[in-house]
Image (cartoon, rainbow, N blue to C red; front, top):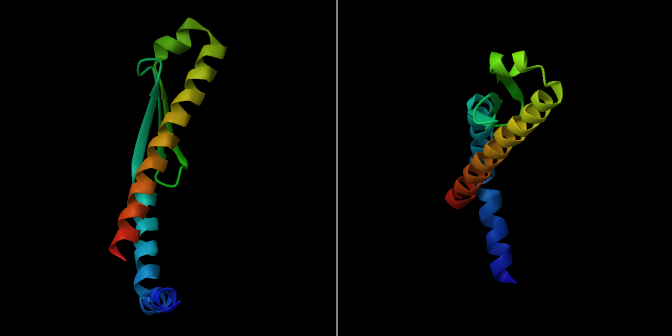
Length: 101
């Protein structure tokens, strides 16, 4: 029982450092950029570390082909890829922050 109380006291003692670390993490994630691809790079989507969509690039040749459904599917796949990359990076950042405390 005293072990858990000691852990709680340690967390309370370091609450300021935890808050500061979380704020710094949030700023890093917002500034980070992750690009996902689909169709062999014909569609590229970029998100920030929070998963917000920042940019979409589509190869003009793909548009000229006229297959709207393919463009839609590739765009969704590229967004998913970018979001997965951002989530993995955010998870690693959180683990580093937690390990430091």
